Image (cartoon, rainbow, N blue to C red; front, side):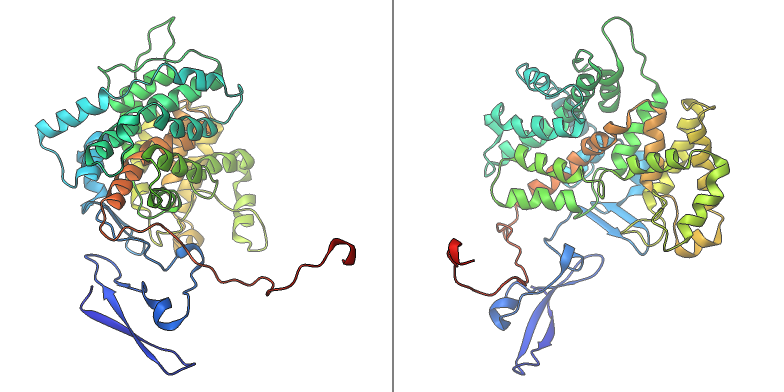
Length: 431
């Protein structure tokens, strides 16, 4: 418990309630309302849990006012510049950056868990040819517990670790197989000689009849995007994983629930919405008209990929990925593609127009990641799948932390009931 308290006075009875304050190492402290109902008879009301700390965590810290994001205390800027996605994954799971021996061992474990059980191929064949890849991801990831019984005992730390390794390792293969199914091509086996993102590119785009060369810029860009998307505190999908996990569900089911939550357009579909918006605008000449619509509060049009619900300043991930986006477009983008020209024009306006500057509506990470994915040849319906590959690291780290927490309880939010009061059943003939 914290050493400070907050006093609440019930105006109905005059009773004073002392609520303990839990201290944070960074950011706001939290008033502990665990006994509030028992002491007062009231529930607290917080739609969307926007002012409620649902757990304590040592994983990720963000400060929306300052535009700050840290993994295990390390600024995202430093990790993006010096680290790799696999190293960040180790950091998130184990709390510290690895030495070379630890990193090599972790890389080896991930690499050798990348193969999918051959029976899973039948699962992919069972989906309709135009099934959305996220629908396939939810089904296939949820089915993994039927294949890997040796890592579903959540009370066994070794099982938890193996399950974490398996999910991080197998997500690229499941994602690539989902894509191959949608285009009617044969699945490609993982190649243990390739990097994590290089392997993903190879499994997605190589075909048996010709050699595929992995572009180092594409490989580097994906690794950076995955670092930036590895975790983001208690967002909707992460909270879903924790809530599912609080029931004692197996880890594969928990991650499948996170994928389902991420699929929502208000969460993981933001970069897809950016490309749809650019497609709607169509041409640079139409920008003034659409900007006028965006500035009109009565107009339903909204500029997607600008501003952020959490970051009230600049999205720190956007500052990092912007440079990579320009590098990718210069190397791999189609110079004649009007969408890229339009996007860069919008970016320039947003960074100079007083309307955007005053409201801090800067391009966010989704604006740039969507452009990178398009330049890499990744179809729009795979954008959220790519997000889920990266976020799996955060999900499994959050799940492992939750299972190991001493004050872990099954999630059970309460409600403010506003329905009908008790009434008696009326027989059908009397209604």
